[in-house]
Image (cartoon, rainbow, N blue to C red; front, side, top):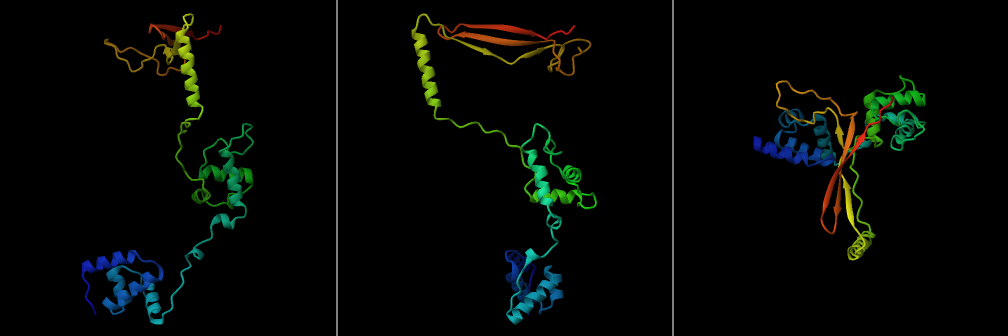
Length: 253
């Protein structure tokens, strides 16, 4: 019988991890024969391998007959395969969530975030399932995942790619600007407005040097007025004019 040390054990274990199926069983069985006199119990204690797999591997070496793995035929039947039309009903409830119907007639999940709990309740309410007939929320969540309704990150809208007309548009703009500059009777100006500023007793993160701190509104939902800064630029002379437009909130008497 060959001797085995800890270093060799680790090398063998790493090699086993790279094998699958009958090749793995055959290799494990050969190690048991070479180092542990074919004793499956000793091999299990020393290497951490299951005895049943070792026995099968030894039989395969002894007879030359390989066992066929049929993992896909094992395990329990999925719930959506047990309950007829469950997958179809789940899809019919989940799909309108992505294409909302303004008439609110697409089902109870149209304007609701799809969760396992919400889906289970909708199956009972809209599809006539009983509480006893349906599986638990966790299983409903697994069914949603298998059907592709898993959690996905919300994607930001991608900016539109440059269209072929862009160059023509800019060429036309530069041509018109040049014609305007050469025309003594033409005045070209550029006008721009900046973000509106709410007027009211708001803090805006400000500070004041007082004995008692000044009080401000906690939200700026209802400002007394809005101040809008505008700028007008004379393109030829570079003369810039600023002015402020005040938009008062209408008072209802």
